[in-house]
Amino acid sequence: MDYEEVIGTIGGCGLYQKLVLSFLFASTIMDGLQVGSMVFIVPDLDYRCAIPGYDNDTYKIQSESHEELINEYIPKSEDEGEVVYEKCLIYSNTTENGNRTTKKCSSWVYDKTNTHTSITTQ
Image: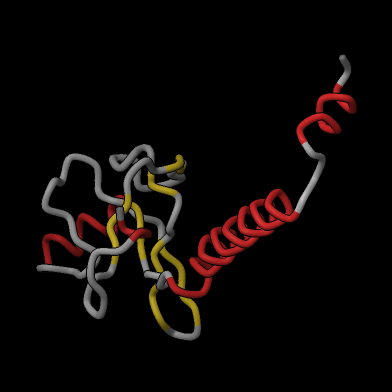
């Protein structure tokens, strides 16, 4: 027996099979919409590289010594008069003040002033 004969023997594609398929398609469409909505629901948080070896690092500057560490480890630039810290790079050699090279960072700290723990901060 081949496939077509088996389908013919058991009754073919009837109303029940069509209903089951339509419910399956509807459920997968809803899943896709839910996953796609994350782009619009999840907040875009400010973040920067975490200071290596500083376990209590936060996005918000805690003190003058914390600000000095941030300036020593994190490259910065100015955007419309506001200091902006690099989000993906960190200085690889902090003892050499001249031509410092950068590398990609492996951990980040997030600005949590107006938000709570979310998918993007995990």
